[in-house]
Amino acid sequence: MQQIADLRRQGSATTKERRILLETHKKKLMEQIEKLQEHDEVINEKIEIYRQWELENQQLEVAEQ
Image 1 (cartoon, rainbow, N blue to C red):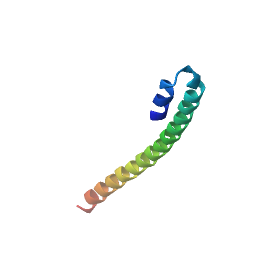
Image 2 (image 1 turned 45 degrees about the horizontal axis):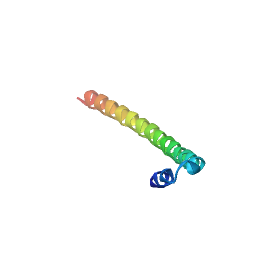
Image 3 (image 1 turned 90 degrees about the horizontal axis):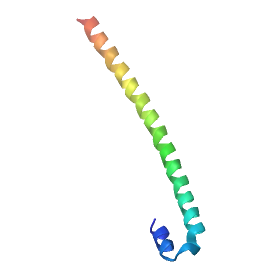
Image 4 (image 1 turned 30 degrees about the vertical axis):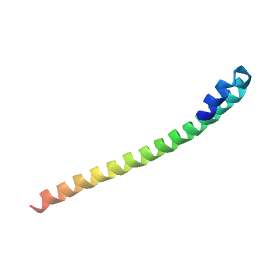
């Protein structure tokens, strides 16, 4: 983003270059967001597995009493 600020100071002749930099930055952000969403899905699946295990353990404890 510093590079964009530097280019902005150079004036309107750098408009295209700034746009390209922003598009590249956006692409990288979207890739990061996609990875984070994938990680979130995996974490949610694991949380659900642990909830199920807890429920099963509670049922076993009640059955053993």
